[in-house]
Amino acid sequence: MANLAIVEVGNDDHITIANTSAGSVHIVLDASAYFGIAGSWDAPGSYRPLALKRALDTRTSTGPVAGGGNVLLRVGDVPEVPSNAAAVVVNLTVTEPTSNGFISVYPTGSSKPNISNQNYGQGQTIPTLAVVPVGPDGTVTIANSSSGTIQIVVDVFGFFLRGTPSTAGAFAAIAPKRFLDTRTFRGPAVNAEAVPVQVAGVNGVPANAKGVWVNLTVTESTTFGYFEARGHWAPFSFTSNLNFDRRQTIANMAYVTIGRDGKIEIQALLNQVPRLETTHVIADIFGYTL
Image 1 (cartoon, rainbow, N blue to C red):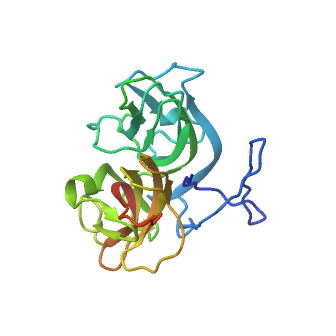
Image 2 (image 1 turned 90 degrees about the horizontal axis):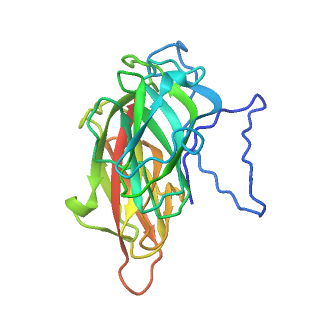
């Protein structure tokens, strides 16, 4: 299983990865990007990391979120996060779901978008990172799209400053938007096929964007495998953005550099057996960097 994380670097130039289980694990770490301090620390679109803070745990506060219901996260209630932040970087964990489903996270005050941040099965505990634009009232909405109840845990990693970004590397949020769904667009991807997606210059992403924050979802895969997301025509790098099992529906966020033609591509690497293996690919975009 894979998950994106944005991790503040320690004073000794290291980060720590801790195994909190009783057993052993192997760890694979792929670096996608970094944040540096360029120009003003207070420039619009700048990222501010935080010491990890638990902002919401419905198990100890509101109780389970009903099927078809939602819960609000008030950004201003999180220490050190201003109420006018443009977007927050959060790790969302779904636990104790009583049925299969998915969650959608979006700025409060806007219509519920046709996107998913994470899909889950009954009884499964699963996390995902999300970069979520903040609504005008300083809240984000976490919607439960299943018929059963779920518990939600939200940990905040940092936030992006509001304003019109102009500095290279600055972030801008967009209303969450589905850019690709092979179930309705072109049919499933076959093994090793790279599916291109036009992102620059469309749906609120400017032509001069350098990278996008994209939530990848796999569904209806006929075998196990993984996705690699990268700029269009970029070389294969043997990194994975999303790992999955046969027939599993699961999501993960990725930061993907845009190719020179304004496209990204998502390549499906599937366990190849004598028969043709396929999978569907879904891509939802939440923001971009200049």
